[in-house]
Image 1 (cartoon, rainbow, N blue to C red):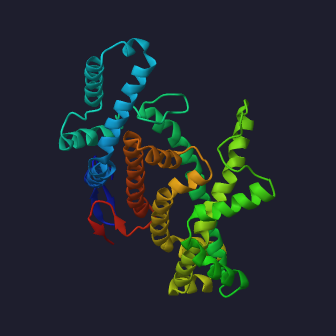
Image 2: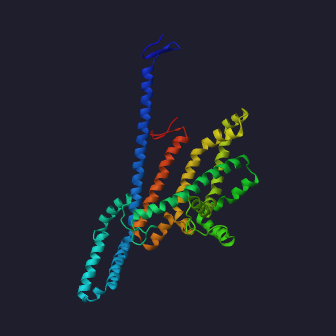
Image 3: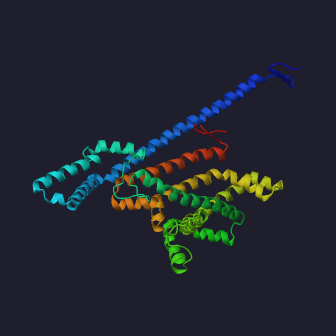
Amino acid sequence: MAQDAATLKDGALIDIGAVETSAKKATRDAYLRLLRFTGLRLVALFFTVVIGVYLTILIANMGGYVDEIRRAQIREGVDLRMQADPSMQRLSAEERDKFIAGEVARGEKRVGLDQPFLIRSFTYLRNALTLNLGFAEQLTSDSGSKQVRNVITERLPSTLVLFGTSNLLLFFLAIFAALRLSRRYGSFWDKLVMALAPTSAAPGWFFGLFLILIFAGLLQWLPFGGMVESPPPKSTSAYALSVMKHMILPVMATLIGAIFLSIYNWRTFFLIFSSEDYVELAKAKGLPDSMIERRYVLRPTLPNIITSFALMIISLWTGAIILETVFNWPGLGQLYFRAIGLFDTPVIVAVTVVYAYLLGLTVFMLDFLYALVDPRVRVGKGGTGR
């Protein structure tokens, strides 16, 4: 017997409309939970970034020392302009001093040095968070622009390409090798990885020096550094091949510096979970080894692996400064190193802000990956639930 909003099933009258309404309400509540969780995490990470950037501004000023350097640079620029202008030589000493004082005052006002540092620090913080830092004091972009935003945006893709490729290769190679070793506990390769795990205490750039010496200096198979050969190839395919060739050594250095410890750690996770009772039951049922590894060993270990990998990414980001400098890779790390050497405060703060955003994004994505791989995690409930 058909009814408008109800049906009879197993002797019970079910209200279809009520079921649909309940399902819609549950979906809406889930979306609201997700939005609330996202908003709270973004606000928390944003305040963390703000505090970190403000501390960087305070440290970068070095107690007023950088301000004195900038004032000296302004005065030096005025002196050079006066020496290059013959008409200035005909002025009296009093007129020259008056002209220099006026030009220096205008230069200091242009960069905000006429204001107290406390006021300037908060103005600088607002500009830093929006990358609205004006012009670099010493550095220029590859296209010749001195605007800080252009300097940063031209170098950011190079860093993302290098470390994105390195991190993806590291993650999948380490998981594959760890799974293989978990099936061959005590074998020669397992003992070799255990013996090589302490080498990960050294950063990637340390191994990069030896790789350059061997493959670029002695064997001359690969370039010493850079991102592309000079002059750059005109065709897209040749340009891509040149970039891939120049990426081999820095990627190898990153892998050597982190892969053995990652394999050892993750192989230990796999060994622990492979001894669980439900894994033995799956083996007794005759399930294939590949299915057992994928469903009963790999899946429950993913939260631990993702956490370990996220922390590793953060350490790799922080090590990008020296690694890119060693391989002359035109990324943010090399730019940061040069900016520190030249006391280019706007570029220093801008690169720090970009790194802070990248690290915050890494932590933010970690929360969502947890919810995807671990069904016990319920987003927006303030913890785990079953």
